[in-house]
Each structure stands twice: as structure tokens, then as C-alpha cells.
Length: 109
Length: 112
Image (cartoon, rainbow over all chains, first blue to last red; front, side, top):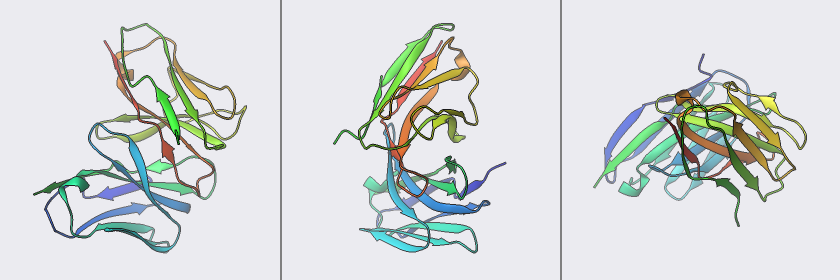
């Protein structure tokens, strides 16, 4: 049973393209996190959100609590954006997080 | 600004050997976690500690033990390593689910 589903699993884009990664979840949550992992690298937190929309540079994250859905957008994509993007949710109860399996993004120059 | 410090970065073990992965955070977080990451499976929780002195099993606890030595440190022990434990291990910490997760740099473990 997967509480968090991400799509697509793999994504290849040309530099400059607008990119969308989707995350759907099945449990009630207190917050949703978007994480980034570069090849062979550690995992960093990009966004934490519980409603609405957040923007940081070329990255935008949105969440629709009623539809249990979040999107991560990258505008004017660049090869340095190539990474795995992971969606994670914090359920309303308990101290655990549920993770999606990640979206592997490759941006070609 | 150390954040979450995890050691070692790489380790190769023979089947049956034991080892301890160390994790320390300097952000005064209550919650600490150990995950393993395997291709195509995402991050899976091994054990977590909601506060100093408490530990709880996660999704895949078999073959592992943990110790929350104090608020800063949370170690993961493999008593008798098996090839199925070949994986990348991440330690993480946070205040609560409503606060950002901070990860260590990972330990790549190979068991032959």
C-alpha cells in the first residue's frame, strides 16, 4: 500500500522547459515536503507546505488539501536541476513520514 | 552549521559482521529517524525516536537495533549483517512532522 504516489517516475526535459512533478497522497496530513537528491548526494528539503503555494527562485510548490494533491514546478529548467525529487507527507497522527518513490529529472542542455 | 552528521560514508562488510552507524544533530530536534534507500523503493523507515529515551520500530526493523544515546545522537546497529542489508542509509531529524526534515549525507553499505 503506497500512501504517496508520484508521477512521472522519470522525466527528461530540454533546458529552458517548464517542468511539473505531481504528488498524490491518501492520508490526512499536517504537512507535505518536497525534497531534492542529486546523484550520489544527500537529500535536502526544498519546501514544506500545508496549504496554498510557496515559491523559491525558479521552484514553485502548490498543494490542494481537498484533492490530496501537490505539484512541484520548475520554471526555465537548467541542467543543474537534474536530480531526484521526492514528495513526503507528515500524517495528522504519529511522528512518521511517508515518502514517494521519487521522480528522476534529467535536463539536457 | 553542521546540521546532521552521519558516519561512516562508505562501509563494506562480510556476511555476519557487525557495525554501528553513528548520527548526531546539533539543532536540538526531538525526532530522529533512520531510513534505508533502495532502487525503486523510496525511503523506508527502519526505526525512529520521537524524543530522548524513546525508540519505535518503523516499516523494516528486522536485523537492526537503535540507541537514542541523548538528544543529539541516534545510532543504528547491525548485529549480523546480511547481503539484503546492502543499501544506502540516511539519518534524519526534525522538530515534528510540521517542520522541515534534515538529512545526513548517507552511508553506502555493501554486505558481501
